[in-house]
Image (cartoon, rainbow over all chains, first blue to last red):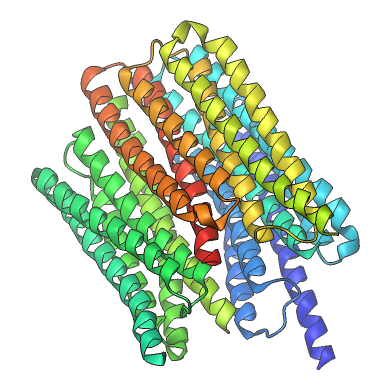
Length: 208
Length: 208
Length: 208
């Protein structure tokens, strides 16, 4: 009996880790998109495939949850964590799609910097999610979560700087509409990273 | 005693069903708005009345929850379900209001198609919510929820196609601002349908 | 032992109260910003300081939660309440930042009226949060929460009136983009007040 349970425990943490690792990859592709505007289409297809893979992970995770009697964390928290990691990747996908369908021209530096924060946020989430396996990592996990909050704050500041510059530099309303939307979608990715960090902190809060 | 409890169990499921049925009706009115731009005002008033009815249902649902000792699902889940169904109708109301106050001209095909997905999403939610009454329906409820996720994906794709077309076809920034906003609000309705599906799946995850 | 616990109980309610009081102050500053467009910069700095103070409160609240064995409310609810109050202040901060970085000119009356609703919403939240200390206040707390829902409805109506006027009066797309965004951010503050009210009502629903 115990043998049957232990692998299942691992399975959920493996699933979180795999989803978070996909999120890191997606963030790296998104960063490349901001740095290589001539490669938008193939990179967006790459990101689409990662988003699809995450959807499948979420789907299988919820199915597994329905078949598992004893879970390593509260069932609701596992469900929430699966959903919120999926949201991060969905929003990166949305940002990539906007970049492709807007044909908005070469990304300004602020877009690159926002994407860098997203990479950092996803890396910290992957580290936090990995640490969740054992309560002895909880201090480190908390530090990762705090780093994600910093990423969200940095995202906020970058967005406001980007918008100020956009309105100052451009008099073309269509250009403004496009980049304002892309910047805001990128910033929402950092918000969604914070949502994952909040779920993780909530898990630790419950356990302690 | 038991007699007093059974009707209350039914009462909550009746309330979910009624709210979800109002959501389906609201979605049908929203679809008509995209198909009959000359009828915007009377249809928007119809949708407003449905939104008001849903608000009342939510309000009475929460009051009832405060007076009921034994509930058929976890109290938090009932509360969450009431709120999230209400959000769907609120967002349809917001979309309708935007269409009225923007006076944005005849809706492009993409708006009609988004509204059709919303109808489908609400129908699947009504079916899922109806099925919640008995655990023996849970497989069917799960299939309904998966259909809602597909609706959300379709909403995403439609939004991106709509935005690409919008920026390609129109050079009028005010027209672009208006339809971009309406499209995005319609797509957020499909997101909110997915939020309801997630709560329902969370309930099943807990019960299983 | 009991002595050690009682102050901790108070500590969480004190923390909620302090955060909600900061939110009221922030709302008053935001209102001033809509009334004194020449004072935007110093007022935005004031609001920034309040947002920072709330961040610290949230951070310390979560740390305390991790060190407290017995909590006056469910740990998850305390966590959620801390986060959602923080969201209200974050969104006010975002609205203030937009006003500063857009340099959008004197705020129209609708912006002032939206800010007035935000002040009212925050005051009702502060009252609700204060009442949570004792179950004998729960009826009054419920009334406060209902008042917050009314604020959210009023915010919705004001937003739609503001948008209708904006598109009717202005033919300058950049002006429209700026004020549309500011109005929407202000309206999202009223949404976030409603989110706090929903958490509070959820707590009461559980307790009753």
